[in-house]
Image 1: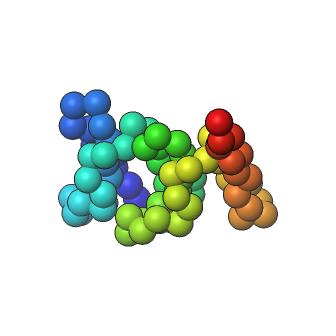
Image 2: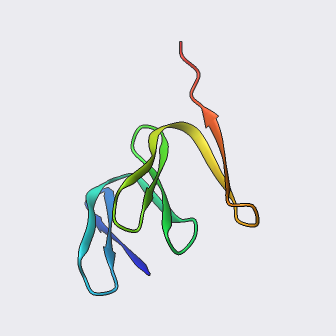
Length: 79
């Protein structure tokens, strides 16, 4: 469903028709399921298949439990 593209060191996403979903602004992108992507700016977040932010990039890590459709998020410690 998604194709990760890269420009310099940054990654973005296009759909199978070549339409830009998100510009190349992320350091990391991983498909969680057919509708959601885990992304990394300064921390981890989640976007949907349209590039809409589901969880902001403010977590140390995010795990997705497919069977239960649950996100397990580790919040960044404030110093």
